[in-house]
Image (cartoon, rainbow, N blue to C red; front, side, top):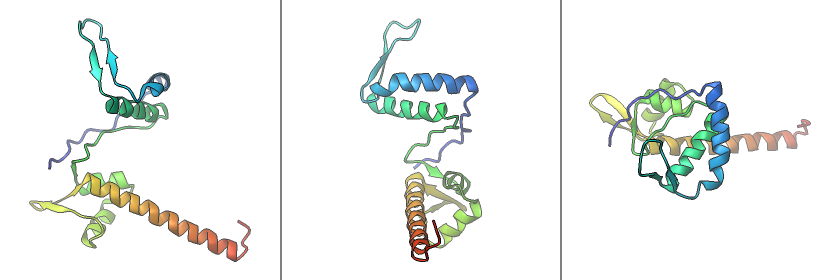
Length: 148
């Protein structure tokens, strides 16, 4: 496994947002197909495989919404800080979850590393637990006739 290189997320400018919106609308219907792109000054077209086109459309949709974007390979190993940023929590919280055995990790020397797929599985569990808790609160509010 390799650690990811830290590249800052790309924050789109206002012009990028407009262009991304137009591009995502144009490419959206083609997202299930490979594309041949003709580049000025190049004789042969470049072929982009369908999965990459789908990812490109997703990236453009996020940029069109003004969101910063980054790309992380699924086999990546993350630092505790990178995992915290993905999860939207503090680094100390991630460390506490690692120590409690709620999130798998391994050590590289003295540093903790977490597989990206493990972080995403943990994030999904967090979201599922959060939804379950909110549903229980809503049920209790209904049972107590709190008016919402």
